[in-house]
Picture 1 (cartoon, rainbow, N blue to C red):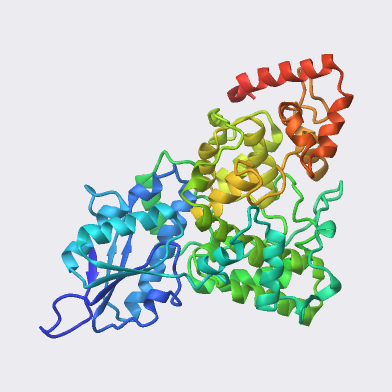
Picture 2 (picture 1 turned 120 degrees about the horizontal axis):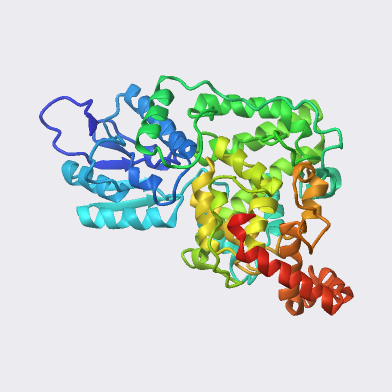
Length: 525
């Protein structure tokens, strides 16, 4: 346990307050640090190997958190503040976060433990138990990083049976005056989704300037070696690690996106292409979710680029919608509906996750491409997550919590407040109509239209029966048939459900039999 006391004199006996800085709260606007008194306060940061095994975390995800935490602690040290930093390979008999923190608190005996509200319901419960066990007063402060507090979101949601991001987004635009002319949206409309759903041309995406990546420095190199040593069997690779781990790097990544990539982000944000892991996407969720970037400065940079450099409004609005709309909305939903949210399973699905979700070893070209990309980088963009890995898990009737755990494990930007509701609510439709208006499902022909994945696949997207039928297409039609009656009464699914009336009994039976065979052999696809 590395402890630094930059205080002198015998009068000091114990800290007035310990400020616990969690691994996704790495900014000096941290509310618990705002009135930090170096004469009587103490910073606590804890690396815990048990956190990497709550879900079987990708090596890059572990390395990102550890490196960013160590860089942040270096700045604490430079400021001359007293701190305790528990490293991964210390306290081997106490692997869990709560147990390690409890040992520190028992040694320091502070008057108070203070922290910013965590990004996970589980962690918040652990913190409360730790404070109680240590006999320390606990103060949990709202997280001002977010532009809508938990209390404000709860007031917005009060009395609403169904929560809709579109209405929340408009309220946030008005409230924060982002892309607004008074009470009206610039350009005369709230969103430009119709303009932002194009695939790449048949010739491919062409040259796309790379996002900003960073050569690992001494700290990151040490962390990479530590992860390889302690988590050799965990999924993923560290060969391509270049994520921002400091505030300065995060600002460089923001500048790079806004200056060279934002203009072309919108039209192809839903497009898929082999060997094109980044597309025109920002990748800023990594820095945002560690609090290395403030969403206000991200939005201000995007809006300034539109006003000063006349960037396409459709691209800028599409990006603003992600940051100010969906990101804030989904965080509000998480805290409003936890812990019940984690148990959502509208469809009653109970199948196990196929083994190739962890290896990428499948003949399905779309799944192989996205899972192997995820293993290489710890990253996939939102359509890859929603309409490839997520949609297949829904159609294949995988138990939702297993899928949620996989997403939380595999992505470097994954914190439970964002990953769990996105996975269970949006990708899997397991929450019903609580905050999404329909299940996000499509046949393999959607993937063919939006990508070049299908050209190298032995399965045929247009076929729903036979030996070469696309598993996505087969399971899509089975899903529709299983829920035909309820979809006929669904305002956004009724048209699709009515199309099932054209299927003859023999074709319905053939689809069902083929789908049953696919489901019985998921690991062999």
